[in-house]
Image (tube, one colour):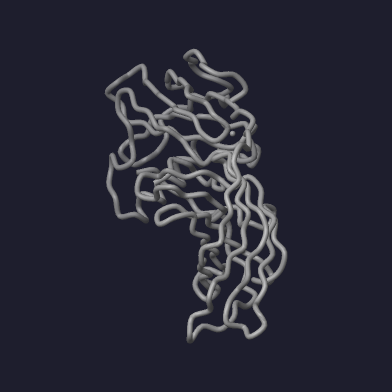
Length: 276
């Protein structure tokens, strides 16, 4: 599972950061000291390594977007959401937590975006102990160096009754695919990256089992029905964080008992996602 709070939807100015300790923290909070290193920075990923000063504690680390920090996330609200997520998964302490030095290779980030690594200690009730340590970085510029035409038969899945959205899957080969999940007023029409839902998002997935994926950087597609309403016709372009432009000319057959997609109901706010 991706070690990201709620990105999907989901961003470093310089390469090879030295270790840092601490950051801008809240008044009145005792800071737990963590050394955070960010390396192997690309347009869509980075390797984060965290070492606590006390190697006996349990802690959690993750990355937040600049927008999430502006929305008011702090160590206590993050810990509360994490506790709710752990309970929802039916897990117990110390599920999802780290001890001693730990690292995680992030993928699916957006180019030229700012992210902040946060690391903080938790007690056995998943309450934050002291404040968090922060380290901010930005991803590099993406270079588009390849074009791939997608003409294989795709799949359109209607989740309007369950989650109020629909899912478009466009195969690249037997294993890899481009996937866009929309929460829109109409399932048919012209869509750009701004129409992609901010939680489910859009990805280029190479290896789902090993979490090998990239965010979709831009999308410009048109979805229509063919004349006899037996298939959805998808045309346009998608640029992935893998540096590939995908030119799309795909049909997605309508299942025998499936009705053409209708306007989905609006969904609720973002959900918390835990790293495994």
